[in-house]
Amino acid sequence: YRSPSGLREKSPRPRLAVLRLPLANPALAVWQGVGACLQAIPNSVGLARPADREQARSHPMSHTVPLPISVVIVARNEASNLPRCLASVSGWVAEIVVVLNATTDESEKIARGFGATVHHTEWRGYRDTKNWANARATHPWALCLDADEEVSPALRAAITAFLDRADRDAF
Image (tube, rainbow, N blue to C red; front, side, top):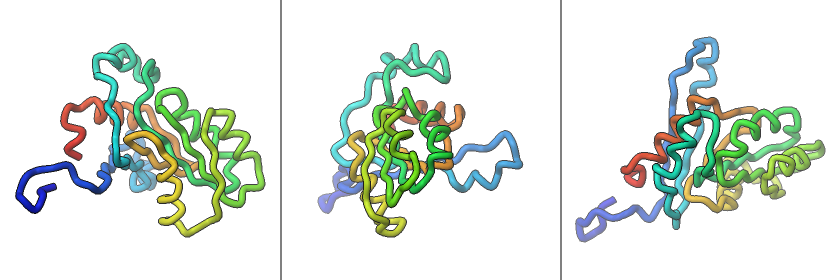
């Protein structure tokens, strides 16, 4: 972002990075477009030093220091899908936010069982409901997932590598 004076400054708007990973199984190519969204939230806080996560990175499925990511999920009656989705992010992200609308099943109980913060709101349309949900995130990055999605080990490794980059704030 260049200010009116021509100086390079941080953009006042949130940043957005979309990760697309090649799939090992071509039969799953239909899901490639679903992807995951890392959306920067204003007033970000500093990340733990990469050296602090060296031990966590030595094993691809364990993190001793949660990444500064809020996972944001908007759902309605997704009790059958939420456990798989939440299990894929539990333990390595700093926060899980689940926003439910008109839910009549066990979705809230399941989300709370994974340590998620649960909010209720009426359906405001896709864009407005997602924006309302993202506003509940408290960490500098938000990973937006649908309840029927999960974070694969490859995506988790890509997110970790991205957040370990020295130039991550340029995105």
